[in-house]
Amino acid sequence: MNTVQRKFIIDKLTEKTKLRIDILKKSVPELLSLNVNMLHQVMSNDFEIRTTEELKKLILEKALKAGSDKNIREDWLGNSWNSGHRMGVHFTFDEFFIIPEKYIRLREERQEKVDKVNKEIGELQMQLETLEVRIMVASDKTLQTLINEVDDMGSISMIDTKLKLLS
Image 1 (cartoon, one colour):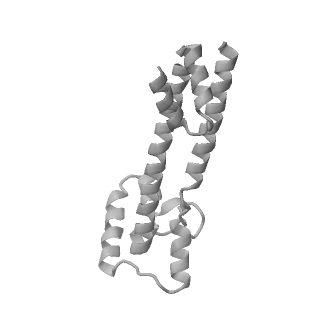
Image 2 (tube, rainbow, N blue to C red; image 1 turned 90 degrees about the horizontal axis):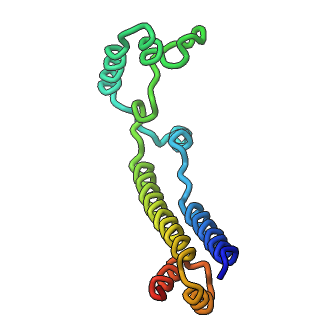
Image 3 (cartoon, one colour; image 1 turned 90 degrees about the vertical axis):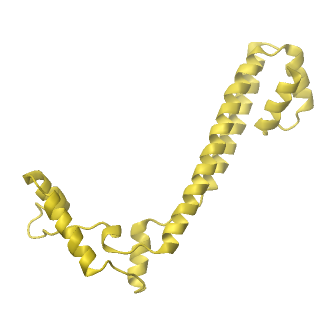
């Protein structure tokens, strides 16, 4: 088998691997942003805010943290320090609101799925790299046997296993 034929096999495997990676990436469910989730909570009047004591403590922490002129503008007054009359203490959502457990759970479940998908993608990429080397150094007979026995060039794990057995 010449170099062009070997490159063709590698290109086909790469193409199939990219398709599989795209399918894996699309399998990760979308998660509403915290902004959208909290807006929905507020509009449905189903939200909780921190206690007055918690907010006072946070305001004090922000005031103590605002040491220099620059920090006063950024930490104390937020990004709107120079926008005319709109000055005040700025809170993030989780500083002001109590984030619903359901949202936290959905975010954690999504992250688990993302981690699982990323692991699988990494394994596919490693297998593809290994296969590229094996295909380039394999004997013509080994590659011909592989081609004859493997109908679906889409299963990179199957091809990797078969090539290991043939070598």
